[in-house]
Image (cartoon, rainbow, N blue to C red; front, top):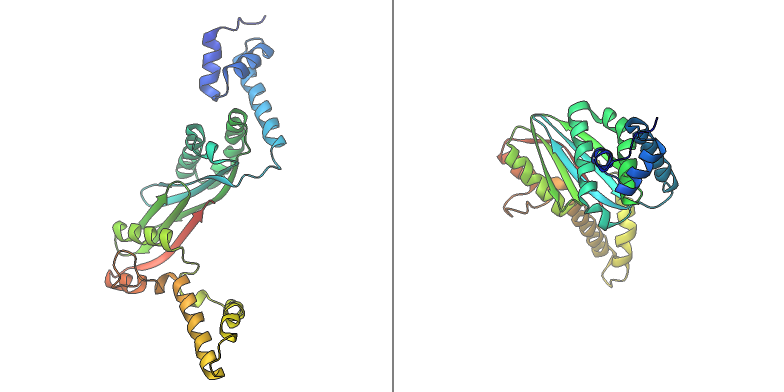
Length: 260
């Protein structure tokens, strides 16, 4: 025997899924008023919709960080347009995924993400997919998120959370490609030489001067790209390296993620 499809029943299903009133009513009608069956119908439809959108480009989205007592988790959630990226339901989905990752771990979050994203895809009409997700654990961790489009997490040994946050803000602004010079391989140096050699070649200086000019350009380039060599944006008297030395802290790790 079917159950009467009341406004209250539709509202209950909408509150639990977030999809439109019309879709909830249709699912309840198909399920003859059975709430559990209606949920299964909606989840199946959301999965079908998500599958149809799988080949679409999801290059927008948000990046966020959730922090616990001794760890932080960075999560990137992609969608197709900035309109959806700014939507409250999309932001709530990212926050819910972050909370699961924080309490249950990244693997558990990834197992649950598909179904959660499919429901929002059904509601928003855009492809949604999980991007880069990473956890950092340790005693001195801080993060900085800029406009939901860029996020940095920093882990220090020693120092303070305030120092870690300052360095995270610096990284977000200066976008270093390397943490220290030791990460720069000979191949990278040779690639830089090829680029800057073209600038030096047109000079009428002697070859010896050209060689020094080339060396100077390469050194300047990698100094600007290497975190430890960069001048601290909040105090030009220090590089990041000398700032850490002054504060008796060691930078153990940082992660940076940017959308767009």
